[in-house]
Image (cartoon, rainbow, N blue to C red; front, side, top):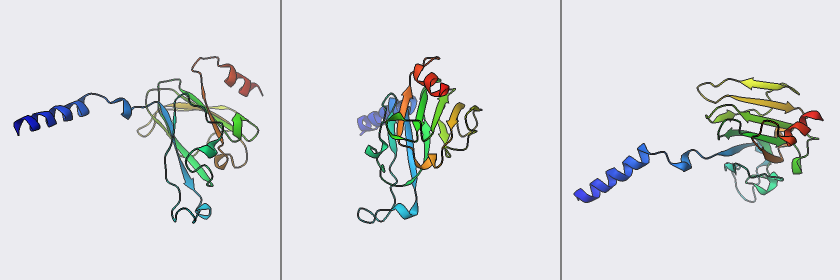
Length: 172
């Protein structure tokens, strides 16, 4: 009995005292607030509530292949990773910018939380300081009607300061 108790306490100590890689993943986690009229009764009586996890570096050219991909709704997200982690969320498939896009760049090690993807000024950089709920970040939002309901593809940007892809987006 003493051996079991000692093993249990040792394992518990490792879990509590040593950071686990799975707790601090570098990823984008999105949730979709499904519009009540888009619930599909054939499959379920409740709207989709699954988390959409996109690991750092994995580009998604078509969000329909992700959970809840065919349901109508608006997204919120959390983004974890080191400072300078940058993603671009497009309102069209295959990283097309015609239906708007949002560039999000982390400025510190904390997770950022965005509940509203369109609450930023259009066509200019916006900075948000860290607070008790979210880390610091910068955004560039190219406005488009119903962008928040049209999120269709996501691209991770190389963390180099002069990333060619970002430069091309901002020129046009």
